[in-house]
Image (cartoon, rainbow, N blue to C red; front, side, top):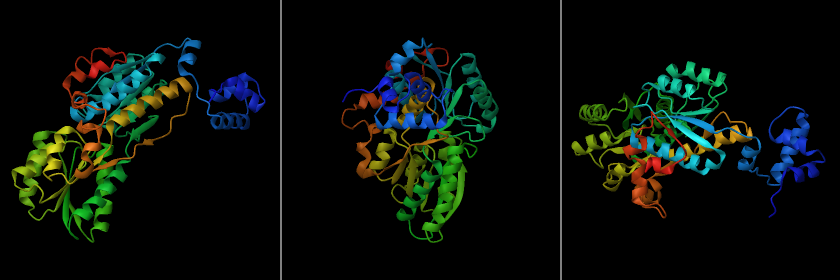
Length: 382
């Protein structure tokens, strides 16, 4: 099929090429009705702009995208980083540059890292906001300076951020509640292990689960919600103490990726397979616990895809002037033992080697990231 261009659209719309250009780029000088008509014609004709040619023709400077995500937990946030860098590699012909300023952990020194990125002259920031209350003023400042803020994985809803790319956290919590109600007996008591309730993703998943589970379990109850603050030892000790104290507990929902210490606590008490455990996301360390039945199911938020999409839509916005939606929700996947090995994160899917998947979680993905700029090189994470 022949590629359609601006001149062909102008003929179809009976307007000048300049009018089409103004419509496609959201510029002033035409009426709104004309803009809508041209956009409708362009869409129906399958118009796709040549982004590289546009960048060259306008003499565009390199597009610098700041990235502020945690180093820990590596096996989760490494997937997110790899998605971001993979998409940046695909867009390298546009001169996309990725400037990494990671935090050590979720919610730690986020304001400082964002401040550094603003001094780097970035045009957009991709951030996982662990402490949205503290971050809101500086995210608002970034937007005021025309730096687009894209929250990834979780949100800072009180800020003026441009958009969020994540799962719908409340729906994910309700999905876990529906699964849990099918795994345990009616009126069963269950509990939630979370990271930090001041993190939007954790709070919404908790709220969704707590709202729906009692309805679907004929009066079952969520007896405790425990914050483990993404600390492995804290999660292990608190989970073990919970299980020893509440012997009637039938299920646990871990709504943060830090599930391995919970699995270890369950196994240490000889409860593997005896208590229904629903986790969040997927990485290779979870495989043995799926295989032995410790993990019954996981709600997978697909961080690699989130990273790809976040980079894609923000570059599209900068180059194409395409409006950013207020949110972009990635549908979660339900992982069970029967479909475990169809996911790329296990390293066993067609076309994805185990070594490739293992490299996602490797600490080398972050070596030197706070000090240097990553220029679209996939080998930065290998």
